[in-house]
Image (cartoon, rainbow, N blue to C red):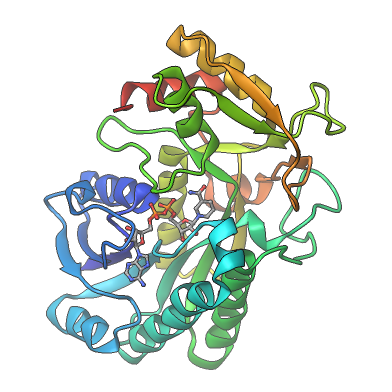
Length: 319
Ligand SMILES: NC(=O)c1ccc[n+]([C@@H]2O[C@H](COP(=O)([O-])OP(=O)(O)OC[C@H]3O[C@@H](n4cnc5c(N)ncnc54)[C@H](O)[C@@H]3O)[C@@H](O)[C@H]2O)c1
């Protein structure tokens, strides 16, 4: 039996595909390559170039392969873009996922691991953020994912869909084979490494006057390999008949922007000039997740939790 991985040509999905294949699992990838790369897909995976919202394509995949479960990574994931083009996000992340889910259920594929996000929580009411925290997204990206969470709950009740929604905090780092490539790049660590490599004159830090020890915003960084492992554990949970769950994936400790830059200076040996700019609207001072449930329920133990490990892995793959 095979696992269908949507978005398997993207940053996180491609690592999960490698890990599944290394574990002896057959993998089918569906990706429209709008934001991913064909070269990032493990050559042992069967690849379909197409859209998750194309029901005929999903039907064909289910007909040609014995699909046991789906790991659904595909989405658009830029907060700023989602504010400018909310319709794009609701269509690609919410409506297309509904089509995908309907077709999977019609083909009796009812185990589903979903890439959700801490952006579904919005402005934190308490830190660390656990799964019971109120969900009030601050942008259409967060809403597009929260709507899918609600849809999955209802499809579970109506049709017996079994899902694990993994709410990731900030994905980061690289494996020996795969690095992070987003275009445009908006993630902090690749931007810092660009500055270290001289591809950017400096790193802009948005806000130096937050109520944090060094005045810069604190985020929870979680290594892409640890994220991938959590997907494998979520799949095992569903395979054993486990219930539908919402689970945070975070490091449990926050690092400030200046701490990340300082760690990158140590790892790369480069100066990395910093320019402090004004705060961006809607950026909370602290976002740190409580991942106790992932540890207790899935037996998840993140391995690459120090900034040095995270940045070293990204710098090794840096091109
Ligand atoms: N990177 C993060 O820090 C982070 C944090 C929280 C949640 N997430 C979620 O994790 C998932 C993966 O993120 P990523 O950073 O790997 O993104 P990515 O852009 O690198 O990968 C997404 C992949 O999905 C594909 N895709 C997009 N729309 C598609 C469609 N309609 N049909 C088929 N393929 C489509 C893209 O071509 C790309 O290969 C996303 O769902 C994202 O929302 C990411």
